[in-house]
Structures are given as C-alpha cells and as structure tokens.
Image (cartoon, rainbow, N blue to C red):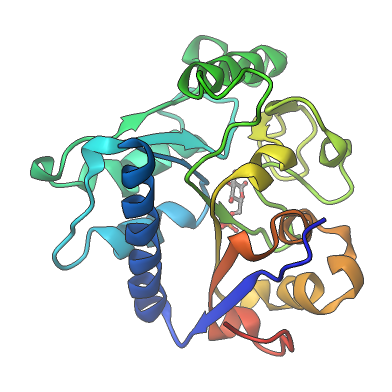
Length: 259
Ligand SMILES: O=C1O[C@H](COP(=O)(O)O)[C@@H](O)[C@H](O)[C@H]1O
C-alpha cells in the first residue's frame, strides 16, 4: 500500500480538462522518450478515446505518434470491427484522426481469431499477455511490465479496466492479463490488465466526467478505503503516481483536497 496520495484535478468543463490532460500526456511522452525512445501506454475504452482526441488532436497537435506503442487496458471478446470493441472505438475516435505527418502509433489489438463471446476468453488473455511479454522483454520475464502511462476510465459503479466491484479478479497477483466471463456490464466476456500491472505503471491517469459519476467519486475519495472499489484500489496501490482528471459535475460534493 502506498503512503502517498493520488492527485485529484477538477476543471470547470471538458475543454479545460482536455488542455490539462494534453500537457500531462506530453510530459509523460517526453519522459518516456528520454528513458527508452518509445512511449508505451495502455488505454481504456468507454468515454476515454473521445477526450483523448480532444486533448491531443485539437489545435497544433504535437505528439510523436510514430513512437507510441499502444496496448488496451481492457478489451471485450468481440471482433475488431464490432461496435463493442475498444479497439474499434479507439480507431474511430482517435487513431483515424491522427494527421499522417505526425506518425502512426503501433497498436496491439487482441487476437481476432479468438475474439468472440462463444469461446473461453482465457486464450485471448494468454495471447495478449504473451504480446505484452514480447514488448517488455529485457526487463526480466518475472518483472511486471512498467507502462509509461495507463489511461483509465471509471464506471459509475467504480470499475476500471474490466475489474469490477467485489469480483475475484481483484485478488489476482500473478497474471498480467486476466480473463473475465461474467462482467456485470455487457458484453460478459472480456480481458483486462490486472491490478498489479496497473499499479506498476510509471504514471496512471483516470478521466471521469459528468454528474453520473459524482456519487461513486465521493465513495472513492471520501469513504473509508474507498469501499474497496476497483478504482480506489488503484489509488491505494499506486498513490501519487495516480492523477484524476475530472470536471465539476463529476466531483460535486467531493471533499478530498484538489491538486
Ligand atoms: O466497460 C468499460 O467501461 C469503462 C468505463 O467507461 P466510461 O464510459 O464510464 O468511461 C472503460 O474504462 C473500459 O475500458 C470499458 O471496457
């Protein structure tokens, strides 16, 4: 358990949030490129890809996208062109909009051959973990992968990645990528990075917006141990490596100190 505190930033609206997220990501990118000439990140689905595009592809976009290596924080077991696919969402909302002169990220989708709701998602998780191990080779196969940045969403129930409240996967200690067959949010079969992998990242950012999140934000930040919610467990495990980018409606009534 970390003894340092996560940062909570609240902005009046999405435009200010996007600008601050842009600065944060560019700083993480610069640090990563100085460390190993590549920017290894994991991204979520849900509301995140739209805000990512707003942050990075607005006026004067400046990232070195050719040096980005993008994994998925979680993914649904569906074909890559399915409306429920996080890959599809990222492609439509973000990747396809990157100007070609800024370079093309390397993207790591799930193995489409096994991506359907009829199969056991374990094989999908194992293949994705193998992909991660190839990327993070040289850091020791037993060492957890240290993403430069993980960009997360937080559901109105406090889930993050595909780690849901009260689910046994929250206790996973050894796997890097785990399968879930009973996600309470459809579709039920998915894969997800595990909590130890999320906590091992150099930096972790949550983006949570809208009044539909305010009750869960109060639980995460103002309740005893964040009620053990998955997003609160990330806060506890990673401390001040975690930054929350929120808007005023999402944090209305949250007492936790900002900054
Ligand atoms: O199912 C999922 O939901 C979470 C949260 O989504 P949001 O729309 O509330 O931001 C998302 O982070 C995750 O990647 C996705 O699979």
